[in-house]
Amino acid sequence: MRKLTFAVVAVVALAATSIAVAHGIEGAKTAKAVAATFSATAGSTTTRTCTTAEGKVLTVTTGKYTGTASGDPDLTGPITIAARSTINTTDGVGVVDGQFRIDVAGRDTSAAFSTVYDHGNIAGLAAGRARDPHLRLLGNVSAAFNAATGFTSGKIGGGTAGGSAVELGPGSCKASKTPPEKSEARGTITALTATSITVAGLTCAIPSDKSSDVNAKFKVNDRAEIHCALQNGQSTLTRIESKH
Image (cartoon, rainbow, N blue to C red; front, side, top):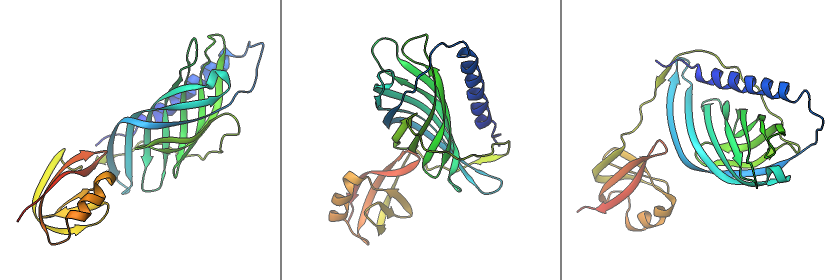
């Protein structure tokens, strides 16, 4: 059983970062408001799940997301986000933390962030440095977030959306059973929709770019052989052949 201490550590780490930044700006001689919007799509992600003693499903995803930020000069440019999300998918709440880097002329703007996730949206705090090494950055951050696809409607400052609060604590969590990396089945198609196919008890998701072709060539009660691979935690169809 795995103790759920990692989420607490993440929040404590950002709290320490925020305190350090606060101490660093006490002697500042200037202050100005800055803001930007951003979006970033998922590149590589790794996901694992477990079930708590209360029957709640926790999904932990680490990933790299890339996109564009636009706003004040120090916050405009390609953005790269390394994020770790810990989400109670049963109740739709959790935390998302990590770091972002905005590629601007000269030294990049970078910051660590920690946010609360609530039913598809995040809101929290970012702390780091602007491109000028003498300029500290401290700001609210919010966005719509999906671990598998990325960040949309993101804001750094500039009227960020308000957030929620969650309690984090220790507990036990049993690793959820995941499908094998690769699987295959041969037999009768017992179920077929635009998004999934079932053959001989094996159900696999159908990628959107294969859906129309599969449904045009196959129907329920046809015999087929399917090959599937684990993609984003789900068995996904990679090949299908007709069998007579």
